[in-house]
Each structure stands twice: as structure tokens, then as C-alpha cells.
Length: 323
Image (tube, rainbow, N blue to C red; front, side, top):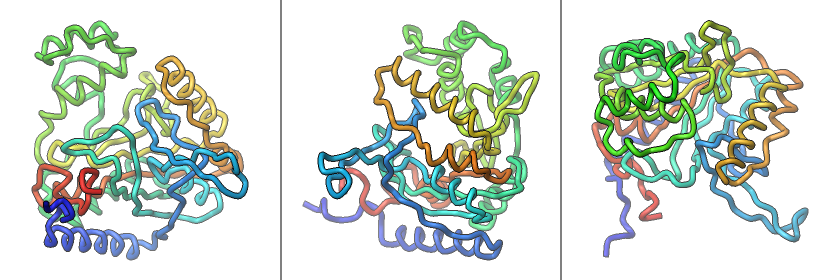
């Protein structure tokens, strides 16, 4: 049996190494500091759409054992560095998400995340574009479109105003097979179905930045009052594949605490594990972090797009099946 062998070819691993070197060169030229933060934490993400992997620590301070969560993003720790006056920072690290495995998912994957004090999400979109073009000058046409305009263009409905019933009817009208008996909990779940099944396949080649999401999908982004109120966040699609997610970052500690608590209430209703919320982040926000924007970009998906491969296992030496 050859199960000991890497899935990615040695040539692909050389391409991967060069990609990481080029990314570091991009940030070095812009005097953005590379940082390193813990993979394990006593806190995890409360986001109901993401499940953390956990390990158990037994030792000094926890003789009976205590759970530690493998981070799904280095975001919380990096914001603590911003509060300590780090200035612009970036990190390339392994992150972990339970239950995610498939053609574009591996439960352990590589993330590039960076934060720019003084930038809004539009300025950060421009820098993401500059990074991609420095890595792949032939990336193709570049477009920027609001979430609302995208839904109106492809589905002829307003995602900020449509009801759950209208969104469900739209999904059925566009032959979204298998969803006629599906019961989804809220509007955002139907919006996600429409985005992934009806809109993403129609996003053409090149770089497409989708920005100003519904306020209900703000996550850790700030909300700009309306009408309609929108979350100042963006996602980047590269040839129709989502590769990055960015925010004009929320800096209000009380609002962030409230969002975490709402996440936990939603988790309780869904019978999901209740994750300890990160009070270190809340304390950092109370201390004060600069107005900034941040973005997370999936290195494995980016490499897939650069090399024209269709499965994430082609760009990882040892994916889950061979780990």
C-alpha cells in the first residue's frame, strides 16, 4: 500500500512553498509584521455555523483536565495584538474546523489573515486585489458588486427585504433540487442556500468582490446604518470559488459581547456545544483597538485556483485521509 505517500506531488509542494515565500515578500515590502499566536485556547468561536475541534489538557493548573479548542481562525489573538499597538500584522497558520471535509474542505487547512489599522473594507479589498495580482497577474477581470445588487441581478429579489417564504419560493423556482421539503430556521439560512446554489455558479471568471452583506450576517464586522443597514464585510470569489472573507472590524466591546451571547443562545436552541466566549478579546476591545479592517484568505483554495486543480487534496501533502 502507498498510503504513506503524500497526496500532493513534490512539484505542487514546491509551488506551495514559492507561494508562501511570495506572500511573505508582499507583506515585507509593505512593512506588515508577521506574527505567531497560539493554536490552542481555552476559548473557541461561538459562531453557530462553525464547529471547533477540541483537545484535553491535563497538567499543572488542570489536574482533572480542561478542554482546549483548536482555533478556527487566529482573529481573536491578533486583535489582542492590535490593542497592544502592534500596527499592521499578518499571519500564515494552520486552522481547524470540525465536520468540514470535501472537494474544497479539509478539517485542517492553511489560512492567511491580516489586519490593516486605518483601512475600511473598500481599502482592504484593494489590497487583496493587489496581493492576488502579484501572485497571479493573469487573474482575469476584476469586479466589485454589493450583495444586494448580486441578488437583484441573478434572482430579481432584494435580500434585505424578502421574507423567508419569498426566499424559499425563489429557491424552488430556480430548481434547487431536494429543498422542497427542507425546513430552515431563518432568512439567513435561505439566503445561504440561494447564494451557494443559485448565484455562486453564475459568478464568472476572474476576481469578484461581493460586499455590504445583510446586517444579520455581520459576524465580527461593524454595521452601517441604513436603510438598509448592512454589514461592512466582503467575500472574494476567484473564478466562482470563495477564497477570502473580510470585515471592517467591530471595535465596540459591548456590542461584541452581545453578539457572542446571541450566538450562544442560538447554539442552545440548536443543541450545539456551548463554547466559552473569549473574554480576553472583550477586554482588548474595552482597552481599545484601532479602527481597522481584516481579512482571512484560504491558502489551499488560492493554490487550487492558481494551479487549476479541482480537489483540495491535490495541494496538501497529507490531508485527513493520510494524516
